[in-house]
Image 1 (cartoon, each protein chain N blue to C red):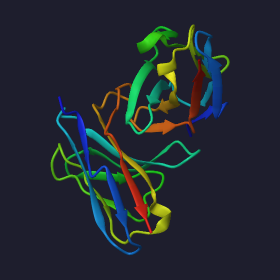
Image 2: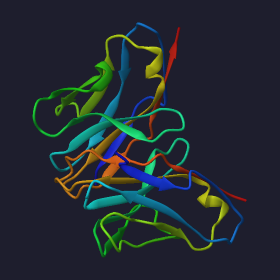
Image 3: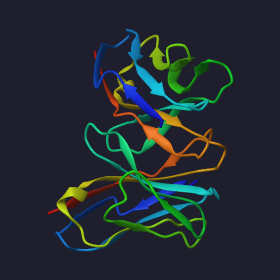
Image 4: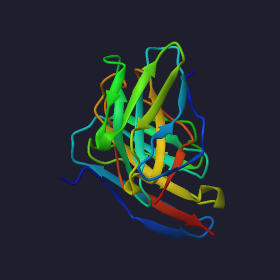
Amino acid sequence: NAGVTQTPKFQVLKTGQSMTLQCAQDMNHEYMSWYRQDPGMGLRLIHYSVGAGITDQGEVPNGYNVSRSTTEDFPLRLLSAAPSQTSVYFCASSSMDGGRAEAFFGQGTRLTVV
Amino acid sequence: AQSVTQLDSHVSVSEGTPVLLRCNYSSSYSPSLFWYVQHPNKGLQLLLKYTSAATLVKGINGFEAEFKKSETSFHLTKPSAHMSDAAEYFCVVSDDTDKLIFGTGTRLQVFP
């Protein structure tokens, strides 16, 4: 069972470059989300989606775009990378159960912006 | 607004001794609470969750947590630590919108 698949696992970008982090899930989950993990700060929500065609901002959305054209895929776009976006990024999915459902996480993407 | 506070950023124990990782929460709703574990260079895995049923929750690998509403706490315990328990642990609260609010994490070290 694949679960949540993130690609790439590692990426180095130059300041100003753009890229897309891919996320796909095969569990037919409605809810998908992107987090960034920085030392001492836990995971912070960037963007989330409650279904195809519906996205919304989380706690730290600036500098990131998302779209959700299918239930399975939820890509995260960095339009013009900045050193402050150096972080580990996690995609997660869950069913929608009033906050009670387990979230399933991808393996993470370690992004360095130089 | 909801929040969680993990009271220790690092906890060190000897193998075979008890583990206590502390978490306090703040929520205006009846919250769902979770503990997730992250082993080095891995994704996060659910250890256990509380969703308004039994206040003592048992999870995987011998971990358990007790929901105490009067103390707004959800501490994680294990009677006997194993070397493989060394990891980062996150306390998480959720409201009925399915958003997860993470604590800042507790790194558990286990010494032989």
